[in-house]
Image 1 (cartoon, rainbow, N blue to C red):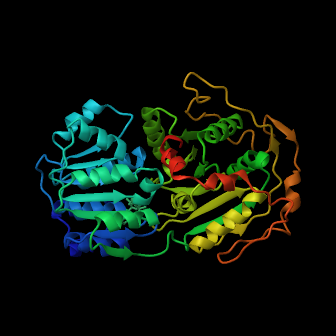
Image 2: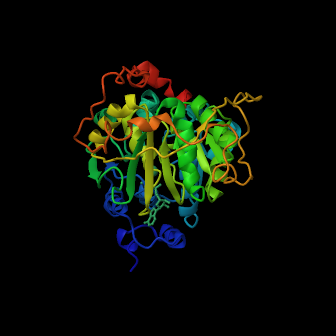
Image 3: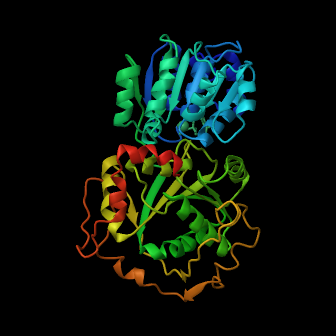
Length: 461
Ligand code: ADP
Ligand code: MG
């Protein structure tokens, strides 16, 4: 008997799972599917890449039939995640006839409205869901299951009020399921108010530490891109994501990687939605390229065979670190997360590691070439150069030959602080940095977001 059959999943969904080639449910699936089937409200915390999507889709999808009424509502923080869940739902519900519709901004309201007429399952982001509700295109009176995926991120992004508005439109009798790798205080607020008698399932650590190695480099801010180019050039045959906090910096990194003949894509909220969707679709298909992205890709996004994660800066919220690095080492695979920080960020990084019981190895700076960093020229979209990778030989200027904008041949002054003052960071330890360098960094000030600032995040990344 297939291990999934023991979970009493509906046989049409089982057929799809078999078609996927999955034979053994992951731990979170084993734990949560029976609880979903027995009608409990759930709060589930399990590591990134542990298969939470299939857990909730198979659980709720096993219990409804096609009625052309919205019975399952799945709310996500980002359009990309909504789209990814839509794809999984289409595959899983192929044989049971359930129709899934995605509802998020940047795409046609009218097409969505049309699809909503026959939808049994809706997956969407809070803003557009409310919009479609106001227009009368989305009615929630038949909702039996409400799933919040990455709920803590939705709260971080200022969607708390939107979520409560959605909650208030759903019938009293329903099952609520909340899934994330991290559960924050905001989530407890939702729980207290809306999720009565929730069972808690906590599977394991935030990420799989046996498969995910963490390393970091300490370098001057203006040399970060040069170091990044050097590091990327060692594994151009593999897929990587580089995370940065701001759209401007994503554009800058993207532009300079391309200047140095590294095949790159970029993703952030300032790009038009069809560009965002196409970029992610192309990146999925691509065997090797680098994706430079804001945290819009940090939550829930799954990319097969992604091995390297770079943090070009520390995320604004500590727990985003988990989600960024959790894009690799998923579903039992191995991965490496590399954080590039300045000396003034070391204490903040140590705090993050301490908070989540992580370890990161300090890497000595390699002998990298200092590049002259150029700013992208703004095109009509205001976003610098185009989004397609270049098909030039990426190794040509990075290997033996020197990059085009090489100003200092081989040595770099950053190397001087690599050995003595910094060391591998472990949880539970504080690192001391010489007072001269330990300024109040703008980064730290940036972390102190007021709620008002937080609520505008969604427009910033
Ligand atoms: P999470 O939401 O926990 O971060 P996902 O639901 O995105 O993780 O799943 C991560 C990857 O694992 C996806 O590619 C998914 O198809 C795959 N996966 C899910 N369930 C299984 C399973 N039982 N066996 C093997 N792979 C699975
Ligand atoms: Mg997920």
